[in-house]
Structure formats: C-alpha cells, structure tokens
Length: 96
Image (cartoon, rainbow, N blue to C red):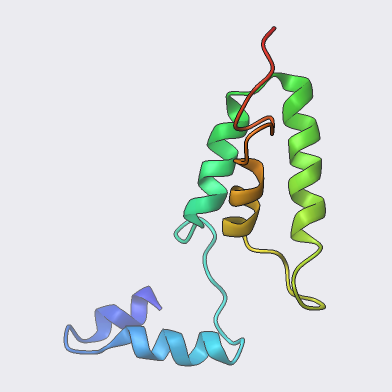
C-alpha cells in the first residue's frame, strides 16, 4: 500500500486500505503497524521479573485465543485493561 500511495500524491490510499481490510484482503506489515496496546503490554512485561514475564506472556497468549467470537482473538486493548487492574503483576509487581 505504501507503493500505491507513492503513485500519485492525490490518491486517497486510506479508503482503498479500508476497503481491502474490510474484506480480509489487506495484510498489515507487523513492523509498521504495531498495536499501541500490544507495545504497552510488551514494555510493561519487560520491567517484570523473569519468572513473572513468562507467566504474564502465557496469560496474554491464552487471552488472545479466547476472543468474544469464535476465531476472533481478544484485542490487545482488552488484555491491557485486564493486566492493568489492581492486584495484577503489571499493575502491582511483586517486590523482591
């Protein structure tokens, strides 16, 4: 899509991207399009103790596999909310 946007400065690539995305025909480049909530989760996990990182990573993986609808992963936004609740390792990390 980036090459498409370079074809003509007047070309509105965003509607084309939305059209393709709505039909499941657009593959996002994970390097260029990182979910802000996923980045927050990864950054927060990096500050935890090694054992805790493994447990939280497993929890995030399980939550991603249990979305609101069949075959639809839970959003990183929803997971961020859950892992930032009081009493969770990301909100209240254990003291060494």
